[in-house]
Length: 206
Image (tube, rainbow, N blue to C red; front, side):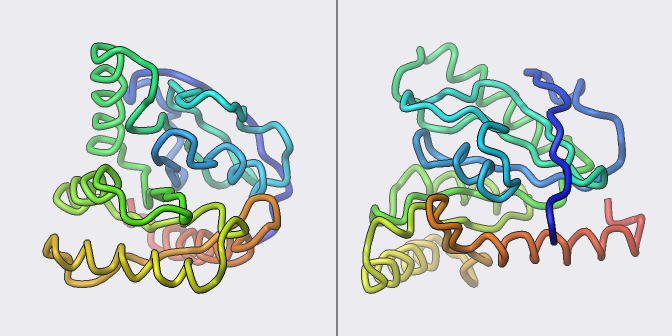
């Protein structure tokens, strides 16, 4: 898939106020400072489509971007904020939950994980929530340029082991990426393109 256009549409904190168009949506979410904004900018060929920041928790709303006029990329707040109050965090988590559990247009979520670190409890817990809620998702391992291929394989194996220990039958589909070197870009866009084709072929796919 080639990205020809990427347009910001709306930001809000209420899932019921998201765009009403029945276009397939792909939501991107991960822990704070996982490199989500950089990844979004990389795959859409825009330097500043999503706002990057050294301050964790920069994204605090549901952000919709229309891509190629036929699907939405949704940038969601991270989980596990470093510097927000418990009250604020509970509000974020509530509208994130509302989005995932009520958004009919959502066809796949991408859970971003920093490949530099071994399996983190908060990531395993979040993916368990997604699985228990029957929300389709894939994993995107970010920052692959920062460590060796051996460590990448070792850390992915550790995630598989953790997920099997948490009663997963198999590891969800995953992608290994680097925003600085555009690693994984074609594979990720190809996957989205394939899913879009299935959705448009079968309108009841929503």
